[in-house]
Length: 173
Length: 149
Length: 115
Image 1 (cartoon, rainbow over the protein chains, first blue to last red):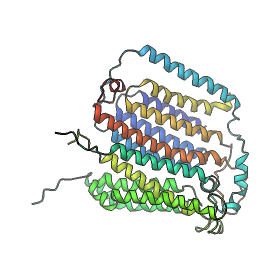
Image 2 (spheres, rainbow over the protein chains, first blue to last red):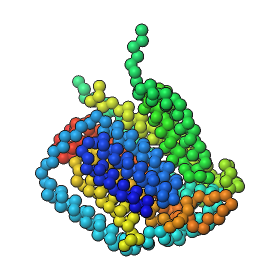
Image 3 (tube, one colour):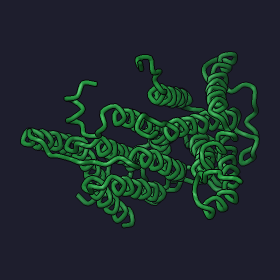
Image 4 (tube, chains in turn cyan, blue, yellow):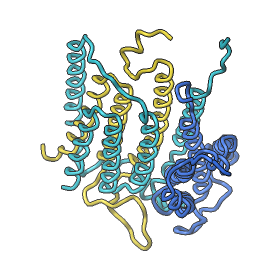
């Protein structure tokens, strides 16, 4: 019951974020969606994810506000909007068709198929000695994926520092 | 006669920052170290530690924060975290395969020094994520383009 | 159809983000739409692995817990959240550079001006 109410709140905040003209207000609305998601993770019994989503949301808000702090937006709606509307409706309809076929294959909400996870839950404590099963999975059973994730973070940091670097003024005469 | 320009935010924000920034850093270290016993882990703890330094920079201006953790030392710390994580992974080749735990005991459950290599991996990931996100933020905020002279 | 209402709300959130990416002309609005799509995808993963009246996947002292929720999707989503933050920071850095070079955030004008 609380889950549906929180999901409806997230949908309303997302509609507000998409439609509001002022940039600062829509960034704050996206922050509301992220905080609602953190509460939903807590209701779905995932405390690791709730902590991580909350602090990552705060950092994402700070970076987005930095990008919009003193930039204005005069928007003109140009031509070619018939083609734009038609292609948008086409893609949304395509996604909904595939979602309908996928929904028939999913198990009912609340009864998951846990084939691999049964092994991890039963043998987790005696094989690794950690009592947090999610930490044991990401660092001991599936440590290779965490290595790939660390590589992605390293590449992203290098790319940001390379894009922001001040280009030398050679051709200033 | 001193005419220093006022940087950062108002006096109220500066006073509260002085009281709480040490507690935020301590809370981040607690979440990292107890990553194998209670929810949290390296990623959440690293982001909280980065947030404490960002809080210092937002309230007091850039010079004060860069004196505590300069951009060069942030780069060194991030590379150190990445090398430590990769080193722990490759050291497992001595025992047999990737990420094998052969030099630390499993210990008793619910104790702080237990679970083999998982606390070391948590510390390495915390260093990498925290220093990397602080370097991104320092570069984005201090970026003065040609329109802000 | 009443066992699937949470899944349908999650798909509606994805459609709102998709509409925002395809239809808006401001780069910051496109970044906001990408963020909403990423929230919807993470939410869907965790929704698949939920067990009714389950417990969090953390062992407690002197208790044997029989009904835990699925911990495997949670491990996947944990890294996905931090990767999403890194990608958002990179897109924002590129957007700041574009604003400094062209003077506008409008994507139709960026096509016509050749620096």
